[in-house]
Length: 128
Image 1: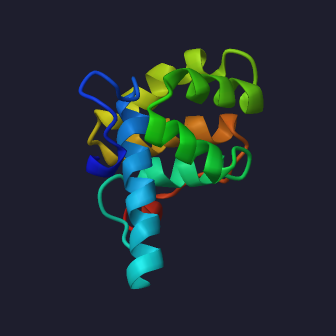
Image 2: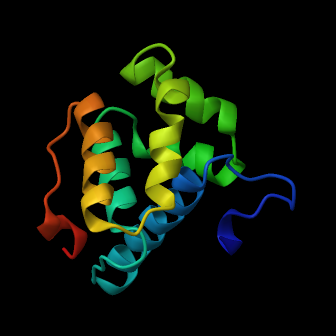
């Protein structure tokens, strides 16, 4: 979070993307610097964001994350996944942040993954 700080009143509106992108880039940094990988923190969020990078370049997510550009995030998601994608799925993204039930986590994550045409997760993905 420190590396992406812009100012106190500027962050991504959704904790899914704020926390998920933080963890995504932290993992990338660990892999590049220490040649190690981890599945701690937000494993499902990172898997969804990783799936999204097949259609939205990582560089675009980098720009969005480090400038906290919520409008660009919404435009990118809508451009790639269809008009109003962000608005229509915002509740799923946020719900994923606040549930601890493994079955519910998989259900919500797989709803999102279906909509972005990505492989579904299994219980194994929660720990690997």
